[in-house]
Length: 546
Ligand code: GLN
Image (cartoon, rainbow, N blue to C red; front, side, top):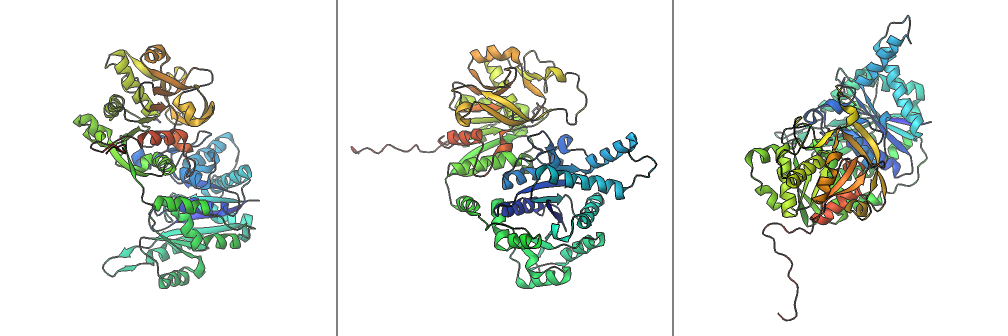
């Protein structure tokens, strides 16, 4: 039977709960304990698929096609597992299910209530993941902050689980913030005390309190939290802000969290081995020569909108022993100003996914710059549409080339709606989602990158390469380096007469892991790192005649 760890958050949001969950997973896994993770999101959307990145940050896609919170990406990268739909639970899903059951007559005669009907539905989701994953430990993050109205049913379900599975099989971890007051130069514990009181009011006494703070936490503060919040002294774990998220498992391990959890849950662990994480963090902290990459997108004001892209770049950069200098370029500004001088300073250009027309012409401009100046380019989903539009305009000699997403009446729809989706009106969950196979063309850059002919990558899109333009663009030098096995869909394409200009219909960023960069990101950085920046001096050949 699986054991459960519930992680709640107090005081403020964005306190690092997701990274704490992911890091607990890492330290348990390093002891040969199998783990999986689940995120509970209290909002009423069924999934974040229809939310703006400004509201929500990146939408992470699982292999089986669930559109989920970006925390799932951190769980996958830290625990190195491929999660599934069961790992993402929202209030929207829970209420839809309970109401559907009521309409079906499953509860005939009964009054449907939050307790027990909604809470039972939630508990079923905990148990379903435990059953399906067969993990030793299921770590569950309760989204939001304790005290939020929407989060109550989730907390109540978490409380009820204690009696169902028994005290030795469940653990409650509360992550809080210790604010620092500059005037008195001290960390304050009162908000933590209040949020623990709030938890207790619901019936949950935390076993462990992880205290996020930008400053070192003194023994005195630890003792105080232990006393006022009624947790053991060793169960007050400092979570001091570190320079890289990949250091958090090491910090928690050093504070004894791994031993504490395995003792409390009466698990039988192997000795921990975090040597690979230590190596990774050592590498991140070593000064390295930077590679300057421009990320040209429309949501650049909110870096979380491209979370997995940034992480994948980071993995690839570390593989090459270099440092990432990421320049966030607003495609809208590029479009409106027409000034691409910022691109002259970079060694590679990445155009990530996105929806809607805003800023598209700025992205096309970046693709033109990359093609004409032979700067490495990686396009991800929308970034492939942009590359095809740009190449189409060049090859067809017409500015009309476009996607019907941006110009429904264009005379050159090089990117178009999937034929079976024409007339589709419903927006939620109607895209091509999750893993699809792709056959790589022998000898292409994509084929060389992956080193195997059949790959699976994750998708999230509606529009596709229009096959009516295949031959014309091929003649002008576009290479179709990855197709769906039936040959109907273009999955990867590249520009032939260019050092490295490649784009994929799928999102390779979702499968990249620290220590195992996605092959497309790895080779993109491999090409970019050798590009000379404007004004840089090429290394001179040493000659004995001088
Ligand atoms: N807007 C494009 C489509 O729907 C691309 C989507 C994406 O980049 N994820 O096909």
